[in-house]
Image (cartoon, rainbow, N blue to C red; front, side, top):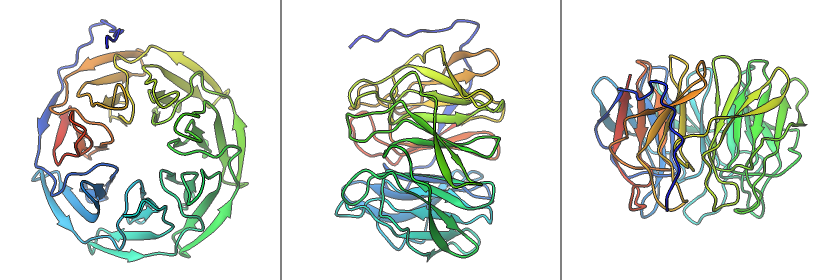
Amino acid sequence: MNFVCLILILGSVSSKEWSNTGEMNEARVYHTASVLSNGKVLIVGARETAISNTSELFDPLTQTWTLTTKTFFIRTFHTATVLSNGKVLVTGGQDENRNAMNSAELYDPSTGKWTLTAPMIDARCRHSAIVLPNGQVLVVGGLGSDDVLNSSELYNPLTDQWTRTGSLHQARFIHTLSLLTNGQVLLTGGAQTGFNVSNSTELFDSTKGTWTINSHMHYKRGGHTASLLQNGQVLVTGGSSDGYTVLTTAELFNPTDNTWTNIEKMNKKRLFHTATVLLNGQVLITGGSPDAETSDKATELYDPIQQTWIQTDNMNSGRFYHTASLLTNGSVLVAGGFSQNVEPVKTSELFIQ
C-alpha cells in the first residue's frame, strides 16, 4: 500500500540518535513501564507464549536489565501508576484465561517487593489510570467480565480503599486520560467494540466526582496517544477510527475554551504507538502499526512552538504495543512490543538527545 507522507521541510530532519541497549529477560508486549524515583524503569507483565507475572528493572547507568520479584498475579493489559510516595500501583488486566481481573498490588522500590492491596470494585482490563492532585488514583472504563465499562473508581493510598466515583457518559476502552493544569482530567476517544470507535471526550472534576460531556474531537480514535504539552494544551495523535483505518491525523485540545484544532498530519499512519514529551517540550512519536498488522520503526518529533513535524532517525527495530519512558537524563527508553513479524521482542533501545 502506498502512503502519502506530508513532510515539512522547514529545516527539519533531526540528528538525534537511537542506540541498542541490553535485552530484557523476557519478550514482552501489553506490558507497562514506570520510571521510579531512583531513575530505574520498572517493567511489569508480558505475553509471549503465555502471560507472565515477572517484572524487571532497567538501570540507565549500566544499561542492563535485572529481574525483580514477581507479581502475585499473572496479568496483561493492566495499568501501572507511580504514586506520590514512590510506590507503583498495578491494577486489573487479563489473567491467563483472558478473564478481566479486579486485583491490585503495590511495588516498593526501596525493598523490591510486591504487596497485595484491596481489590478494585470492578474487574477490568484495557482501562486507564491516572494520579490526581490529591494523591488518589482514578481508574476508568475498560473491558469488564461481560461488557465494556462506564464505571470509574478511586484508590486512596492512605487508607488502601477503593470507592466509586461518577460514571462515564459512554462506556469505553483503549481511551486516554490526561491531567490538565487546572486539575481536571480529560478523557479522549476509545471504543465500545473493536469497530465502534468514538470521537467524544469527557472531563472529570475531582472536587465533585463527576464527568461532564466535552467538545468532540474531529476524528474518531482508539489506540491513539494524548500528551499534555508544556503550554497546557493536549496533543492527540493517530489511532484507528474503525478498527481497520489507521490515522495520520493529529489535533490539539485547548482547555481555555474547550476547543479542538486540527494540526498538520504526521508523516506516518500510527496505531498503538507511543508519544513522549521531552525535556525541551517537543513530543517524540515512536513506532506503531500502519495497518493493525505490521510494525513500523519510523519516529518523528512534534515541535509545539513551530507547530511542525520533524523527521528523526528510525528506531533499530519496528515495534507496536511497546512502551516508551522518559529517563531523568532526558533520554527515552523504548522496550518490547510486537516486531515486524508480529512476534513479541526482548529488545530495548535509547533515544539520545
